[in-house]
Image 1 (cartoon, rainbow, N blue to C red):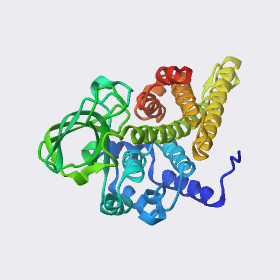
Image 2 (cartoon, helix red, strand yellow):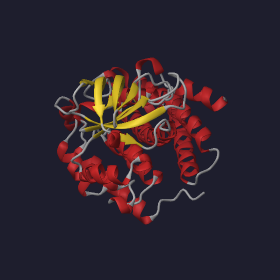
Image 3 (tube, rainbow, N blue to C red):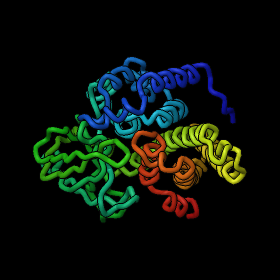
Length: 374
């Protein structure tokens, strides 16, 4: 496998590095977190103008024919900058479902707005009782005339409060935990019977709880074939895990580098902290953890891009490693920064909180270890 970025991918990485450097100082991020909608609309439009929102879509749909490697490059730098904009929710998850299962008419109706930045998508797949099982869907969609009526609740819809349109999983057949019988629907955020409760998450992002009470949609709202939405769900989850893992790798690298820099500046007993061998060993462990996560990310991304039969198993291994190592590196960084590591004024704690949330999304480290073993 060739892990070297080509010229276009390198240009993409350079542009994201500049964006983060110019627009994501910690103070500016905290100001965005404190305001509605929790991110910068100006930044989002800038991403659209730079072509980042068009990156994974086919040229025929107005996109740039990018793939998971380009998404990895982008998300790794987003992780390094603690970027708030809803790229994962709208482009990777909602856009990924549309790209895979959407009809020509659905793509024509929605993708131009997504690519221009005007349309924000929410991917409503999770439910309270399901924990990490994508196939545990209690929300029901009942056929009614030429359309459907949806009833149920959806949890932790990332950036749901700012979404114009939702992709909602609902059961059209079968028992609540069967993989068969799940369908996907396009639901307008203003639909009658849909209640969206927006809230802040611990890492500075935003999510929403959705309640669907007799929400009526037309037959053209069905995304893909009826009863066959699970494969789309699983494919979107795989790409979301790769994107989240890339974001985590970017955050882990910053934590490791910031800790080394701090211990070189902070003096204790007449010496920099970096002179003490016990701390040197711990910082080496942090560096090794970062390198392992980076290597596993590259392997999983390349296997997925090449359609390898082992790709999903490697993705399980990646998510386990990133969850375990990310939290471990963050704990070490906080400890070696001392009391400063716990303050809002220092970015260490913000990375820690983001890594905690990443671990819980689409299955935590323990869950993916069990999936890998199975």
